[in-house]
Every structure is written in structure tokens, then in C-alpha cells.
Image (cartoon, rainbow, N blue to C red; front, side):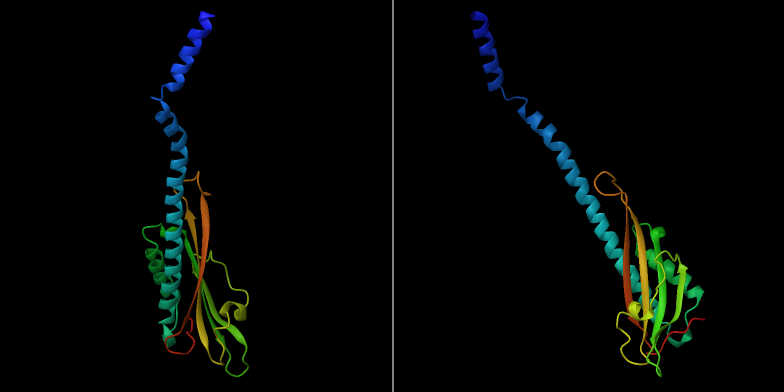
Length: 186
């Protein structure tokens, strides 16, 4: 009987001793806190990539729209593509691809058609299939013209255990030509 009393007293003593409780609680909470920290970091980086891709599409469309009647050439496309990739900084610009098109509503027939499409900036954003669907109703009047830029960016995650390792972000930007006329491709 004395053995049971001694054992019971020791168990009682251990249960009242809380010196290691904080270490155990910390060990349980630490993995969850690390996942939350890295998850917040990764989501923030993904949002930054989304915003930079949107900005790159807008800048690319704006640069092409400024060409006006002078025309848009493949040399311009190369320069503008470099500028769009520079906008992605501090992210890697190598994951950026763009498709640029000019759409005009014919003055006499009212038909919406592509003037040209350019995929020299990576071309990974794909091509536009339908001119009227791509213009999204922005060429309402006969003679109206719009520049359409579709940009895709392949975002590579820094930390792979919270989110998938890569995301493809796609943005489309529309811009009217500065001259009011369509921009020819030279």
C-alpha cells in the first residue's frame, strides 16, 4: 500500500509541475505559425506579381497606342517587350509573354476585324480568335479602332509547401490610338 501512496504522490507532483508546459505549447504552435508566416509572404508576392502584370499590360498597350499612323513594327515590339519585362522588376521578367493586336470597325461595312496581331513578345499569351469578342464592345462606331494587349506571366513561388509552385497570371488591356485612326503594322 505504501508503494501506491508514493507513486500517487509522485504523479501528483508531476502534474503540479508546469516548468515544461511553455516549451510543449511552443512546439505545438510553431509549425502553424511558420505556415501562416510563409503563406502570408507567398500570397503577398503573388499579389505583387498580379499587380505588376496588370501594370505591364497597361504600359505595353499605351506604348503601342502612341505609335499612331507611323506604324508598329517588330523592332518596336521588341523594345516595348523589354520595357514591359522591366516593369515586372523586382520579379523576373523572363516569365512574361504578350500578344498585341489592333482591331478596327470597318467604316463602310461595320464589320469588326483585326488589322494585325503580333506575338513576337513571347507569344505565350495566345492569339485572339474573334475580333468582335476581343474588342469587348469598345469599337462601337464605324471607324473606331482599339489596341488590345493580352499579357501572361508565369509566377514561380518562392516557398512551395504553402501554395502551388507556379501560377499563370493573365491580364488584358485595351487602349485607343492617340491619333483616332488605326495603327498600321509596318
